[in-house]
Image 1 (tube, rainbow over the protein chains, first blue to last red):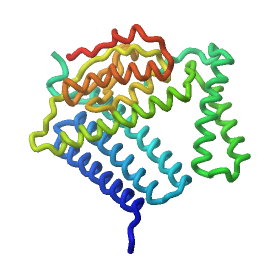
Image 2 (cartoon, each protein chain N blue to C red):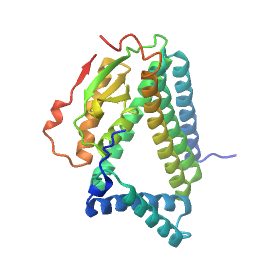
Image 3 (spheres, one colour):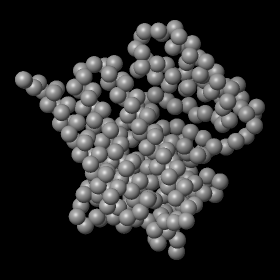
Length: 104
Length: 180
């Protein structure tokens, strides 16, 4: 089996994307409260999704598939940003409004 | 999010037309991505129907979005969100967990509607910032920052959004983050 340059680039992007998903999950486990965890989930996972989509686009070698992947990334991006805001807003009105640094 | 609800009858026809145009462009692009040029006629009809519905239901005036400025903003956004991903991945994996989280308040210097909605949504993907809540009827944004230095992204993003929507400069310097 031979691997072309495009396959190599695509596979590298896929592995990098998975690494960011991994880092996001590590952040979810290690960060102290809901707000910090949201940082990890939205930003690292969005980065992972971007790299995975880019890797798949390179591997597919097709503009049609690339356009679909771009739509997937944009929808994932929007969902991440909006849900992070909604969860944070809900948390601020809940029984545990945040870390002690919130109010003077 | 930042929505001003005035009676929908107060929107001018020109404003409704701009809404219809913007929604039409988005729907046509979506159809092209999903189906290519196959079934172009049903796609156009569906996009027109969606655009008409958007113009009918609109409650707040849209803003023109020049394509070149949109491309420039998209580039800025991709670069900054990649920095954001790298930054939070580094902090999550670092043994010492180098975060210093805090809430800050930021007075928004953006009109209601699309500019504020974009600000609140995009800020959560910038390095080290998370938009937690809108206060004061939508004029103040409560930001959760991973580090005190992350608040710089807030005014940077705001100035890029002002540029995207071709809002005049000037009042830009007023929006400043204050730690609470």
